[in-house]
Amino acid sequence: MRCQRCHGLMVVDSFMDLADDTGHLWLRAWRCVNCGEVVEPGITRHRVAQRSRFARLVERLTRRAPRSPEVVPLGV
Image 1 (spheres, rainbow, N blue to C red):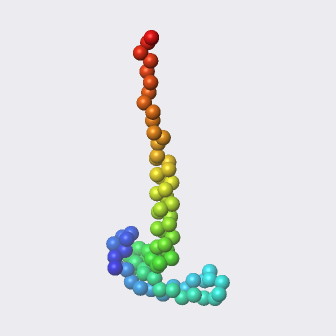
Image 2: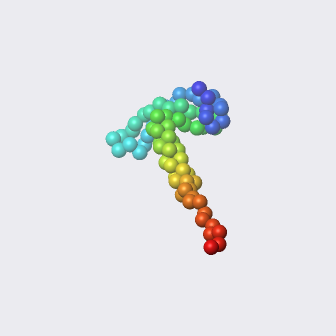
């Protein structure tokens, strides 16, 4: 597997989640040996959600109201 950030080698590594309120929780994730990027299903879900939220914001900000044709009086 290749890293999305630097295209380096990804290896499986074990991590301990200290923020879990039930005690220590060990999890396995992919870690890049070049840049240290860590990827696991929870991180991936969060990134996908952030991208879709950002895309909706950009779409809303760049959407323009349809312009009606300008009426120019011809002089009566």
